Image (tube, rainbow, N blue to C red; front, side):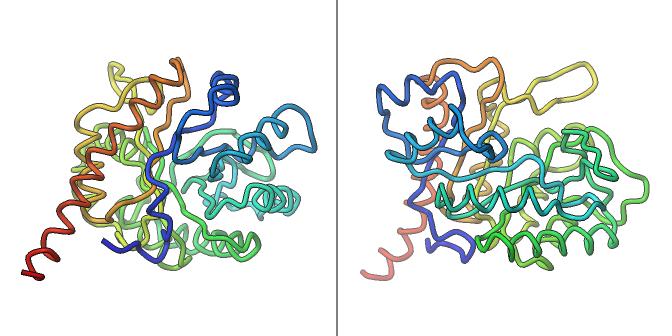
Length: 290
């Protein structure tokens, strides 16, 4: 199955997040990993240990940057100094694309440091898409926006989340980081069919996929990234790559972090699903050659 136009990097396969508890193991043992995802904001500094470690990682591995503070949906203007630092880092890492979240999180220059859900309105579509375009033009690399998990909804919303996501990426002409765990979490919190979500989004724009674990509480499911991936999320992943084809996939594990070997083994479970999709896509070609 051919790569879509937002993801010419199907050979990236499975990656994991670069996390501090694993630094020493990675640098001394050099495990075989397809790629590492790094949180951009952790390395947008002038020096020190973070950059020293990152440079050592870059000597051996491919890296993709993932951001947590762009806040495409905030009404505030883009922070030019933040963008300059971000662009310098993208040049340092040679990240083939950059992802951040479809959310808001700042008002009048004050930051919540949280990924707040959007009101799904046409006005928000227009504002958000324009900011994504501006960032993509400034950074000069592809942008992929990620759907977030949510625990509240706005009465003013005029469409579903998946319709909103699609409208934004089509107008911004950008890619999607499809987080299937976030889809599952939000579907349980808001009572919608997660399969309808996966079926609706434009498959040709999915540049990357996130998988992760979450936590069940009395009233809500929270996207905590501190457990293995559960079967319903794996099923959504299988559905997603069935539509999108082999896609760069990242396991997130950010709390109660186990050993590197355990995180890596959980991530590699995705290979079974990728292999099934690859095999299925070759059968029609083989039959046609008979």
